[in-house]
Image (cartoon, rainbow, N blue to C red; front, side, top):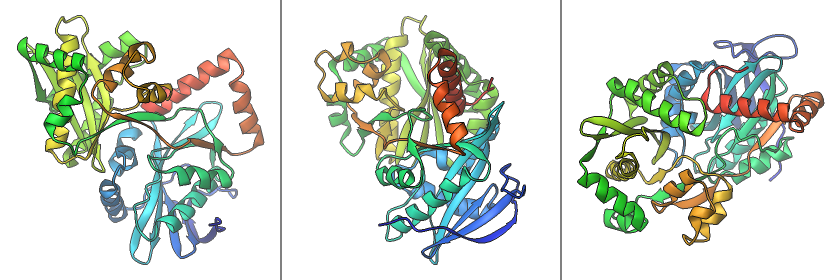
Length: 403
């Protein structure tokens, strides 16, 4: 099916001021009509619309918390602003996308759409996809210098639609391009048998040494921050600060969108992980471990296994291990023999729990004009440019200060 042309229905004052301007210098609140689908683009759609939005996202199988309005509130603490693209027909809300953007020094507004748009199954899915993709294309015509999109699992048509509208394939890496998914519909004993034998042994040994796993609360956030910092230092990347973790918990915990699990040995926390929950998927988001403790390695395996069992008991359909290197997909599919030599240690550990490797659809990107696109391409040809783009990628994924 060909992509229809979008037609502006309403242009009025901004709702909350998204910081994007049209060619007349006005901040737009816009609506578009495409084949009977009305698409609203706004920074602040209002309380009622956001409640309906969150209900739709949470009920869509496989949807990610990064498309929920509480996630937009979390990202405000890292300086990002939201743009909600909502599609409706006569029956109500049928899809949309939450785009997050921030102005980067000497560049301008950069937006990213992680694991979206959200397009629930139904008769209106195709029409909603066409309309939302058309509206996303317009964002780089009205203020954003660049927009990066990582469609969700099963969203290959999104990539194809956007490419026909002027996007191109992207290697920017604004979100993991591959992951491991564990099917939680199987009985617990079947999940246990699927563990690698060494992992089962680590779990047994940790339990024998007295390692225990418990659910965490907001009071545990300083401990979580400390453990995350230890892991960040070990792998040489920046850790999330405690104020950001507090914002994450306070915005997501009330509705059960985030959970904390902590492994302790003799009452001392040695490992922690933060899991987000949405669309029937429990997703590993953050991991921290104190490697100087002898019990740490076994504790990590026990912590993961207990978290998986919790996800199953609480009705989640899948457990997502939070991303792996794209190159690990083929290596894991080839079988366990020699796998440790073909993937990095983190992916090897994740694969030991028996999940299936999956690739997300092709990420895509669009720039506001040829000069911006050429400048971006040239930056990837120099060491300084590549280092800068890596910092921007980390900035988009985790927040913090952009330099």
